[in-house]
Length: 203
Length: 349
Image (cartoon, rainbow over all chains, first blue to last red; front, side, top):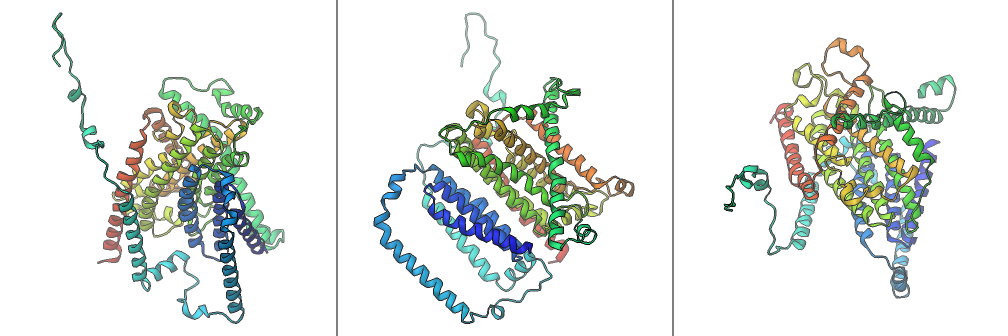
């Protein structure tokens, strides 16, 4: 009973916020609706017993990716007239994409109702008594070790690529030398002088 | 309590669970509000004592009612929404901050078995909820449509995201040593660390540096001094709260202190034995675990106030350097070190 109520609440909020992501005029509002959608999708995953994936979804997508999105979008200068201007120009492409997606959904639903792919035999059988994290860990670090490490390597390459593309050596910059700053003591910079009258100080 | 509603009152299991959880939430949240009011008073008294002042001393005996008087004052003020502000988000932002500060308490164990939600991804839940805290601040800065709050929001977002990375790695070392993400199991793993009669991971020489770094990171995560650049009054007026007044301001105030208490609780729970007495000695177990936990929370809160009263504010580049160039590499290295040591002693090469 309570699961059903929770499911319908989460599902309706995901659908509504997904629609609002597309429909809202203001990009910042779009990102916020998207965050709400992520959040409720995490709720759906908790309902099916995948609490580890749910937490990862919140930590990675809501906590990091969406913050970066919001960061970029907040900086935009929003010109609503310009946003609406491209409607006619992109209408054709949008229509083609929409038709393709609807066709895919129809095919998928057709295949599913025709029996579908038997996932139970392909997936690795998991003991239901051990917790989620342990089950995923057992698989990731044994059977899928090389795939997992390969994925990590791809991410590393992407990271290095991003750094190489954006990093530029600037001339004429004097970066701080933190060690030198910390090592500096008062007696290196100041002297206590007691000059005679009319003599002044030799700097 | 679910069993009580289920059998004694004859409710179906779902509703019994719902009622029991609701009561549990109220039992945690209402005293927390009171604790926040008193801890604001304690904070002001501690700073006053360190500055040789008397602090709040007029309202009630020893000024104890000062926070309630302040609360009543902001409650009676008019809520002002700036004309150019994004009205909905402007009012939503403080609610997010406040709610996020409350939801993490669901997984905090107050004694063995005394926890609202004993989930096995407890620590991940804490990380997830604390990563949401940044939204309250970003939204406040953006929706105010004003320069200083916006700068403050950008600073806050960068600061919180950077220190969360280090906190994540620090927590991984703890999780590896305890062998679980569940907070109760982590506390139980701290019973008699390294075959000594002392409870708490801080005794472990490998984890003690992590305890220190976690304390400093929690200062940065809650934007307390010396990392309170988001509210640097000499540069940014009041930071992201500049345009807020009345109850929405009070919600930030409450949320901020609820976050501070939460971070003190995490320090106590993860490194200093949580609800366990400091020494694994039978007579100490007659004192209820919740009292030990509160004593540790109050100790860490005193440290937070102490730091705020004595340490000057960091410069922004120093803050970023500490986060990315010191804490991140050290905590990452520590993950390797801890896993190596565990491999050596628990599994064997």
